[in-house]
Image 1 (cartoon, rainbow, N blue to C red):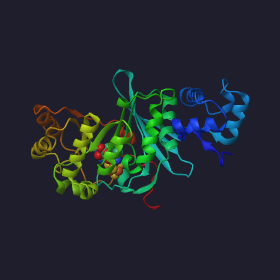
Image 2 (image 1 turned 135 degrees about the vertical axis):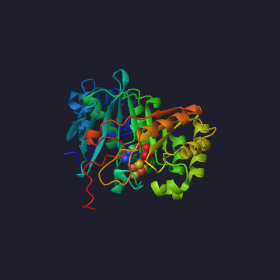
Image 3 (image 1 turned 60 degrees about the vertical axis):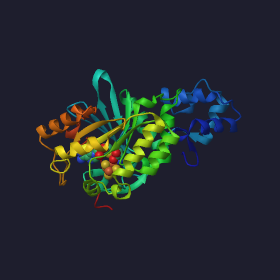
Image 4 (image 1 turned 45 degrees about the vertical axis):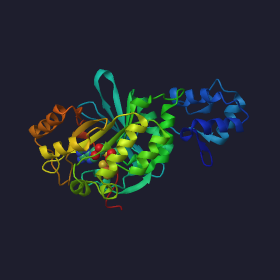
Length: 345
Ligand code: SAH
Ligand code: SF4
């Protein structure tokens, strides 16, 4: 039914305005359209009652508004919710809603089906990349979750490497920021990357977003082993790109550091971390490794984690420990895989 029609969900402000012009409509009507689509979550043009009848008919002839319902929703004991979405080509992805303090909630969304980066500790990476998500597919995860329960922050930390799908991710962020749409502030959206150096520079030029970088090791030897991308962009090159980013954007970077038992959890690691990040405006998120089936790694002992954290805090580095929520429904970091099937590939 929607064949040959354009999905308004995937269009930028400029593209929507262009479409209106083609229909002979004034540009400002884009606000009305945005409010219907994103604020009132209406996808049937007939219901957009402040638009002229003829215009509604024109829209219905040439366009549609995709709207998602999760195929499955799982709720964890701690209130974390995992949404499974079926895509039009049969693939599936997941988004996770994590309740925070004061009634707020963070939504973790995916940017690709699978991931090409092959990080050793990550379940998503085990499956390889199937494809990039489209702009509308990225935006629709937020719309569908919002329809279920309110969301205050967004993190691009689900399946996929966001900077490996840079164009669609940038376009989706710009849609999420639209005042007459969902109106997310740029400080409430965080993009996490495994460290694609040229794309970090490109990102700074193209859109505002909070940047998180998955560091996970303090020597090239260990990082090469954990994250193959390090062979292309080793620590010194990555950290130089991060310094440039903080200078260009005047923003701090959050470094994510998975703690893995006997791999990267020693005091020598903590010491090297302090040296590596010296003079770089940043904070650190420590993520105790989430064990999953078939993984060769283990989470460190509680005491090791708190010693590592204290060492950093004593050296004036803001260090948070990320609580891993939703473990019982496989919704925690690095556990998302949708219905990716290794055998099928
Ligand atoms: N591809 C991006 C964003 C998605 S991964 C990136 O790598 O940054 C989001 C975070 O989950 C990353 O910081 C990653 O290091 C972490 N992660 C992956 N597998 C994990 C696991 N098993 N336990 C804990 N954190 C994990
Ligand atoms: Fe991809 Fe991030 Fe997982 Fe690495 S950690 S495989 S970059 S999703």
